[in-house]
View 1 (cartoon, rainbow, N blue to C red):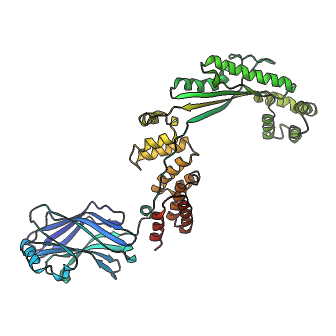
View 2 (tube, rainbow, N blue to C red):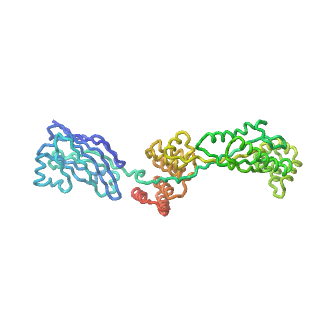
Length: 486
């Protein structure tokens, strides 16, 4: 009657093996069913050595007192031309163990084996480790276990059970990346916009309810209202720059533009109780010739038949503002009237610049702010928040993505997210991010890693040279190139 010895391979943990979970062997000598399990199988490969580790679980293995069982892991090429035997595990019964102690181990195994006595019926695990010199043919070989079930040393009666395939090394497991800790930074921001405030002809008094002024003023006040209500925001400076259109004498326009900018500044002072130094002195451009030129340049020839001639007058360096305006008005009367009606009103505007700071946060504060107002955090604060999460987790990666969304040109933010993309095997995204990652040693190394993964080994080697010159250890990535080009 057939009896079965079953080997189970459990919880395989290795990037270098693809393992079978259950192995069945037939043992015609056993008087009862018996089995052995293997768990925690790992195959690690260094530059010159292959190391196999596993746990043999003997809990259900029955060994007669006067017999033994021998288990020998073997690395075997798929074509059968090569094999490398590793250390044998001998599991002996009570009497057989005494014999081994008295007379020595069976010569077939004595040169390289471990002998353990089986305590039948008791839980028992043997932690196995052995290493051999690596060979090129290992890269696509199988790991099997040679099972001497009769305990007779007759290799012809042995059975081999498949344990795992040794796969070519995964390049993603061989390369090394280095994230960078962003430097602390001031969280200084600014907003820029234009409000088209309408003033009574030849007057500069600020009238909030005149024409569309209330709507235009909201462009400024809505922003300042939000800032004033947020304790984490402090306004650093408010600057108003007024522009007038080119009609009328230049000096008259200078007076209007300057006073109108000052009038708007004074009105804002009245609305917001901020320190006087927050309000910068009002500035003005008496005539907005740059804006006029952009408007004319963008117009279709059908609207301005003499478009080029008007541009030539605007660009003429020999003409001062008043003669320019007069020449256009006299030579191209219809087109001047069109510009006066359709373009000049848009040239009369008040530009505003609001610069402000966000508060510095403790880590606990930053974690809370991140949930609702992540834009108030610096790159360093976002990095610190990410470090409270498991590296590589969805939440961790999301924080680093947020850092790039808020600071799209920050080298550290781009580099750290590029490393995330590399680990996720998204090399296209990584390359795009690395374009903005600067030329630090860490950035050069990450570009080298991308090149390695694209099999551009010459490019990678040159980048690693540059990274090493900047003081970073690139030895692991050099070893990766050696391993992948064998």
